Length: 305
Image (cartoon, rainbow, N blue to C red; front, side):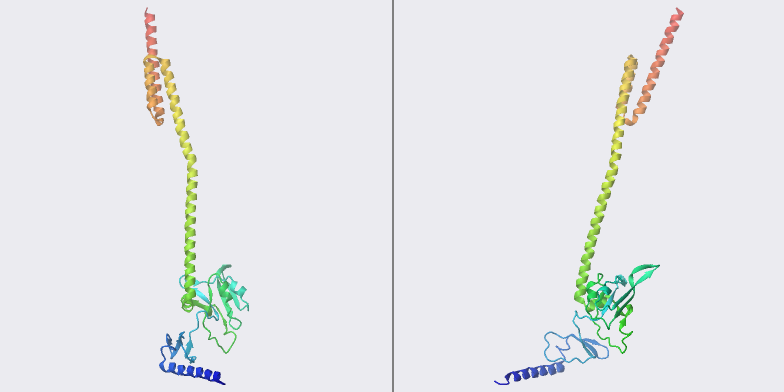
């Protein structure tokens, strides 16, 4: 039938108009479902997937909640856990920025540079919201903000944002990017666990290396102790041989005394070798004294005859 497509299209339009007025009359559960009330009769509206009809947002009293991956002007993150900026002023974001809208000045102390920015500027009139700075930042220090209401009567300097205007707390980023923030926190936890394991392995390797060095250092000392024991055994053997020789030369009682002294030396431990030798020397002196007395008595008897 001629004009059936036109009538069908008009019917769909009328259906949308009807659904729109129905939604405005009910204000729930579709259009205003999950909305966030703000001051001065302002609200942020979350559009459900099941919503039908033509939706007119009463801007600026009503605003649509932008998707999580919406990106506009970059922002710098301040880590509230460590109480310091994540940015280290490495300058990678400024180098990869296609329109070159980022300027960074590194902080200085006592003539030496410090890994933190003293100044950080972004020209919002030039930024193309490409998020290259976010992709290349190795410290997760710069992210894309959702704030798109940046209109100003003067381009400069109102649209050139400095470090104070760009810096936001970590909780702000977590609220805007919950999925991405959770993934980053998981990755950071895994990296921290891997670093802890590497530190433990390094500590174990250092402990094993130290133990091996101590064992190597103790080996010469053990060898020296063994040499000392061998030397003591040799001295003991020589003392026994000397005592036996003296006993054989003296004969009789002196031999028995020398043998007893030798046995005493043999029975004594290596630490008592000196005492045994002293006893043997004393026995030898007594024997010589006895012989001298006998020789004197004999000479006296011969002289009397």
